[in-house]
Image 1 (cartoon, rainbow, N blue to C red):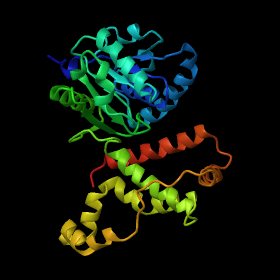
Image 2 (image 1 turned 90 degrees about the vertical axis):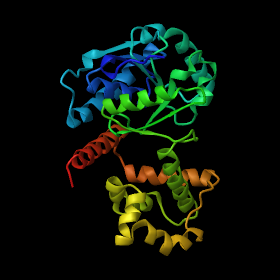
Image 3 (image 1 turned 180 degrees about the horizontal axis):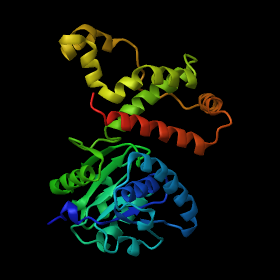
Image 4 (image 1 turned 60 degrees about the horizontal axis):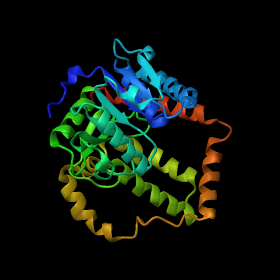
Length: 314
C-alpha cells in the first residue's frame, strides 16, 4: 500500500455533525485544507455551522493558515459525495458500534485503498470497528481531546489488522497539521488521556456521593492545585521535579508505601438518583444563569490563552 505524501493532502472528509465532527471540521479549515463534511441529515446543518463558527473564533486567536477560510467547506448528506476525491477521512459518527462497522464497510468500498481512515471514537477499539471493512489495514484511531479544535492531543493506535505504515502515516499527518499526536504502545479501552481522566472523575463522584466535597469544592481544588502544574509538566514529571535532585527515585522510595493507603477508590460508585442530583444541582449552581454558549466561549478563550502562553519558552 503506497500512501500519499503529506504534501498531497489537500481535501479532507469529516464524517459527523456533532461537537467533535464540527470541531475537527473547523480545525482542518483553519489549517488551510478543503473540507467536505458529511451530515446524516440536512436538518443538522444549522446546528453544525453554529459549532464551526464558534470554534472559528478561538482558532482565529490561535492563528490561521494563510489560505484558511470557511469558504473551503462543502456540506453534503450523501456519503459517496463526501468521500469523492478526498485525501484523508476523519470519522466522528455517533458512538454506536454497529453503525460504525456499517460505515467502515461502505467507506472501504468507496475510497481508494491508499486513503487513511481515522476514527475519533472514545469508546471502541479499532479492532472492533474494522471487522467489516474490506481494507482494514488503512484504518486507525485518531482520538482527539474535547474541544478538538483547540486541544492539541490526538491519540493514535491501530487495530489487529491495521498496518504499521498506516499508524505512522496518521501520526505524521496529525503532526504536520499542527496537533500533538501520541502513538499508543498497544490497544487499550479508553486510550491514555481518557483513562487518566476517568480515574479522577470516579474519585470526584465518590467524594460527592459520600458528602466529602461538593462539585464546586472539587473544581476549586483542581483549578488552584494540581491543574496549573500539570499543564506545564504533566503527572510524572511534576512528581519527578517535586522531590528535588533525587527525582522520581526519591518520590517512589519515600512515598511508595502511601500507594497502599486508601486515598483513591477507582471502582466507580453506584450512580444513584441521589448522586446524580447532587452532581447536576452542584454544577447548575456553579453555572448560575450563564448559558452554555457563554460557558463554552469562556472556556475556549481561557484555553487559548494557556496554549499561547505555553508557546513561549520557559
